[in-house]
Length: 350
Image (cartoon, rainbow, N blue to C red; front, side, top):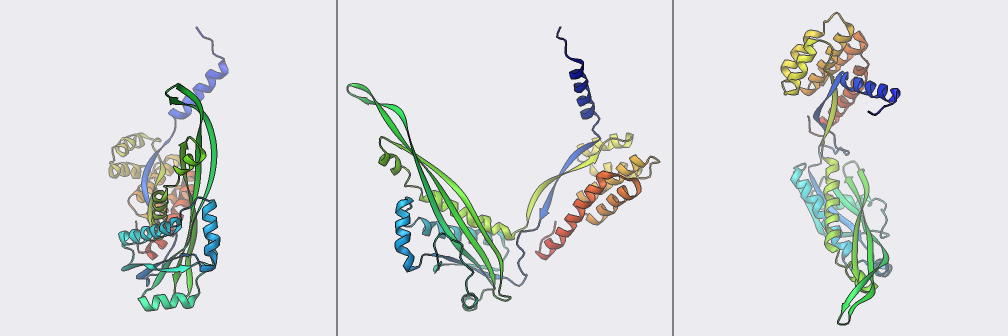
């Protein structure tokens, strides 16, 4: 028989006691979050413009750069167009605007390739919007691919008529960073409503009997860059659309027989009957039990979408019964209440 140290046994018993005596369980709910960017309600028709064209004086430098980084001649151009398509398609899908107009043939130039430029002059923005009857303009102002190569070799063998011959297999690895930068212009107030730069990495690898053969396996990566560009456009569209997140809340499951019964009802999704049992305990002579019951009433109020009632119950739980979990929850609820106001401004509610 194994003799365990008494200290270890005591710790194990303590841990089991903590687990078995846990007074709360988690409930999960979906909560709508406001979009990172709030657009004015009067912006109904928007245009999408590509500003990543290279000016003539930069084309020689750009061509040299592409040779050294193994970038195809049209890689950035096609990636940028894919970004425009990704953004426009997602904006149409989300039905945020009355009209979405991508101007693929209008390619504005950027002063310096690979950098996020200064905003477009307002006279230019005004002219584009006035001529095309637009309320706002989304612009792709940076699309740049930067690739880094690394080589390694591993021993291998080549089959020949005379048998296997020792050789070296050449491995080429490429890390391509795709950078995008966006802005939203509001001509009515001459305000840049948002500017955002993002980057994502793409990894490629190839093998061959010599470095040239290994590198040649990497050159056909245009589709991957276009897909990355399209995804970048979709991700940027998400910045103006409210989204859902899954959150967890603690609720009390112990304190009285009613809490025990309510726990079983909650576990089966019968929150209405669980709430009826908790409400009975809000007047319990025990301040601890009454505080837990008030706190749980705040939880069920949030589940039912009534933040005002949830705040009142959590205030009562803390102010009248000193339930400290309720104070933390109150701050969460007030934060949600503030976000609700922003959601209404964005035309969305829970």
